[in-house]
Image (cartoon, rainbow, N blue to C red; front, top):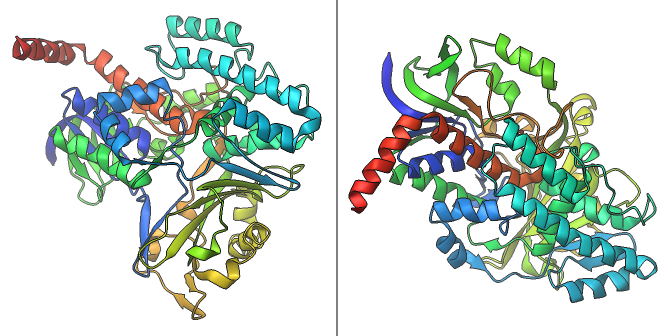
Length: 511
């Protein structure tokens, strides 16, 4: 039974899909957001709210991020909720410990102290970094879709590729060529980039590593409320413009006729909703299972290849007394156990510490990148990851065990550990936990637009747009914003008649 009609239906509540929905709501489109079983940014255990992942708002200084937030009137709220930064992001590896400070003179002092033998090449690298990023800033502001698909868009990308030396695949120039292949500073650049990206570190181009490293140098703003506040703010923008949000409903199939999307069928009830556009916020492999017209996507996979999951993001939350966090430890710490090994398993850890609560307790959120093959094929690997991560933390937090109160992960299927009383606490909603909730990091056989993009926003099915992490995976949060802005622009461009009517109405109101 048909239960309504919407201009745009957003399938999933991932950040790029929500942002695109909010931007279109602001432009007068009637938007519906369906949860599609998207995990919430936080979860409840033992009366405490814990994050599902560490969160650093990287790329907040990017022109495209500022533009999108400004259009949604989020910039003033963001400024009010931004707290003074408690220490710059820190990198810890064997024999080295330094901060990624934004001030060039302070950064130069840090590098001369830690890497005196190669301080000059590192200084040259940081000078080239600002110039290369300025060129990329100009490109991300251009009104184009990512990946670039039209002739004019590809021409703009080609001109940019010539200007910044990285070439069309983003990997034609090694900015650290003066350093030996195994030099630890290479990992100091690659480690922060790996944590911030949706792309597997092994296939990340040099341009993406430099871009994400520059975001860490600029310093992620400390936003009160973090990711949950940002998600809720976007949902409020949708509701405030007359849209609807149904977090518990999901799509069973995307309906189409003659290669054009016409609506969706809801799971459970079988009701259908008509629409002009569907914005799919999930991985392309999951979206294809919802389509009746799959042969069109098979031709797309023949041209681009299918994404392959290489790593999973694993989160471990440690609740401890505030005195268990060493004095001088920054809010964000990147810990690399072995500077000569690959950045996966427990070798690379991202630590995020919260402020102390009224009881004098802090939450230490630790993120690791686990190899997919070991998770899926090695018996007991995931179940033992808690202990492996805690063992990796011992050199960094020598008094952790003395002050540790609770240990929990939403991903390994184990109950919360009450270390203080030596008890296990069973979850109230076990179906919302487990390995299936771990976000995946993919490799893509074919990438476009400077090596930063993968799956196109436009799809072979007209008016079905992909608005997920796989479109601009290399740039992390900034890539999500680029994807959302590109999708919103395509909807407005395709729906020219309604856009013209809106402009006319606004003109009359203003007159």
